[in-house]
Image (tube, rainbow, N blue to C red; front, top):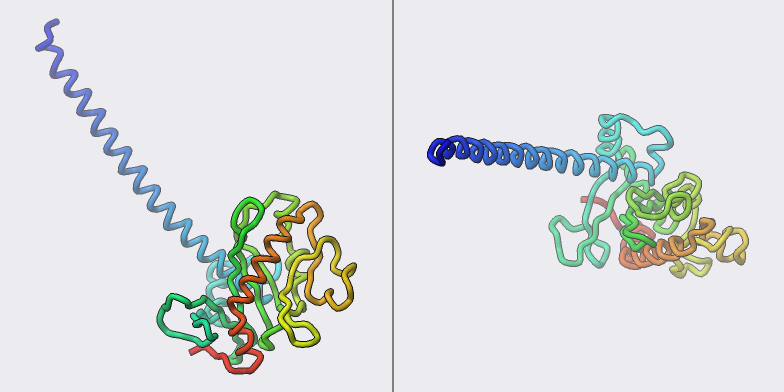
Length: 236
C-alpha cells in the first residue's frame, strides 16, 4: 500500500485523537468548575455551622441545610469593625470581620474568627463571647491539619466545651487572654484557672500555637471587647 493511500487514514486518526482530547478537556474543566462551586458552598455552610456551634445554637446533631441557614439568618449578623471597634459599612485596610449573636432584637454576644498557625498547618475556628465583653461562651474549629488523636482533638466536643465560662480579664480587669494549659487547668494556681482550658495529652505544640493565635486575635479585637464592656457596640 502506498503512502498516498495510507495518509487519509492517518489524518482521520489524528483528527479523532485531537477531537477526543478537546472533549475530555472540556469535561474535566466543567467538572472542576462544578466541584469548586460545590466545595465553596459546602465550606460556607460549614462556617455557618461552626459559628452557630460557638454560640450554642447547634449542639450535637447537625441540622438540615435549610435549618442551618434559617438559624443563622435569624440569630447572626455579619459586620465589619475598624481598629477603634466601630462598626463600618465599607471595607477599610484595617477592618476586621465580626459576627453579632442576637435573639429577638437583643444582642446576646459576639463571635471572632480565629485563623492561626498550628503544628502542621492553619487552625481556623470561632471564639464566641457573652455581651459582657469578657466571658467566653463557646469555641469551635472548622479547619485544621493537626494529627488525629493528638492535636486533632481540638475539634472534639470535650475540648471545645471547656472554653465556656473562661475569662479574658483577671481580677484587676487587666487583659490576660485565654489559653490552653499543659495538662489540667485545675493544676494551675487558682488565679489562673479561669483563663485556661485543659491541654491535650501529647499535643503541647498545638496548644501553644493555638494559645498564641487566640491571644493575638483578642489583642486585635480588644477595642471591640472594650466597646461591649461599655455597652457601646451595636450592628448597623
